[in-house]
Image 1 (cartoon, rainbow, N blue to C red):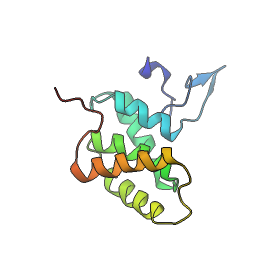
Image 2: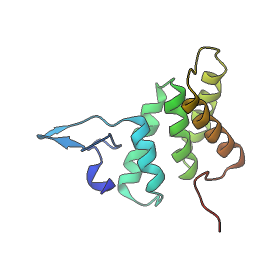
Image 3: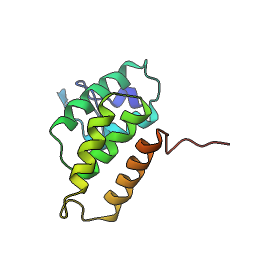
Amino acid sequence: MLRDRACPQGGWNAGNGIVFGAALQPHIDTTAVALLALTDQADPAAARGLDWLRQATTDCWAAYSLAWSALPFLIHQHPAVDDCIAKLVQVLSSVDSVSNIETLGLAAIALNAAERYVNPFQVVI
């Protein structure tokens, strides 16, 4: 289903990639979540999604979006993870950058995972 819902330019949004023949824009957070599910690096949808996410985070300065983006970059061992984490740290160091607990929690998960190079969602039995 995720592959079917991908936007034509790469990435995902909260619904279909195309509606009434018009391509819809992907979103950073939904793309990141989809990429957490598509862990096969050889998957063309994942590769397009990672490329789109890398481009989208180039101009992004939102802690929430950067934290979400860092996780699939880390899990897919994408070279953009270092820049993404550096930007996240820079944004978080601003006093006015974060105003909600969801963003702070997500940022903490991303920073901890990047520091330890682990998948925070992997279950070890």
